[in-house]
Image (cartoon, rainbow, N blue to C red; front, side):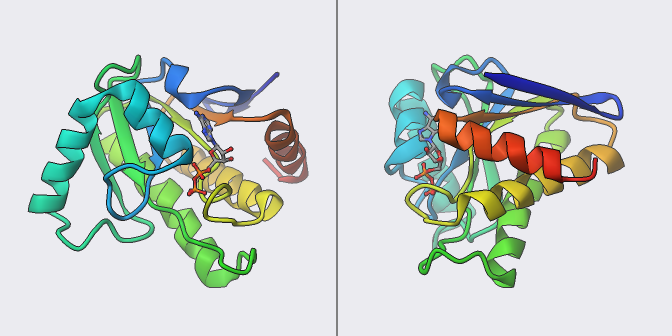
Length: 187
Ligand code: ADP
């Protein structure tokens, strides 16, 4: 299951898969503010990536974010044992009532945008995202997919640096929602 479109000179790819297997230069982790691991994609990245990632996350907590990483911000570590050289850790919003209101939408946008900006700063040209905030953080899949795709497309249109963005979606259902959302967006 894969869908590829061109945005100027860059490729936007939707695929079904496990993000810990991706060979992009960076993969993005839907982390929580502690940066110390958790369930879902976060747990999978730390378990496959090994302890080096956790050590670097602890250092970031001690030096830069003693109170935890604020929602919408992003930080970077190496990829440990993963194929990817880097992991970008970002924190999406929590949708307590399952609603993506304006505030939450902005925070979700920021999580994608700050991850992309950080990638560019670090010379990363290929990056993979999971569907941030749509698991344990309970944001609605369809709206969150639209926000995710719009944010990435806007960035790729404006910035010429990143060559490939992959959305690595864990199930058929999530893939289908993203594919439909992409069809509905004016690219
Ligand atoms: P959040 O707390 O931001 O909601 P979750 O990890 O709970 O993060 O869920 C985000 C998305 O990641 C969900 O769609 C979930 O199905 C998906 N997911 C879980 N494990 C993986 C994985 N190994 N690769 C890609 N996506 C994954």
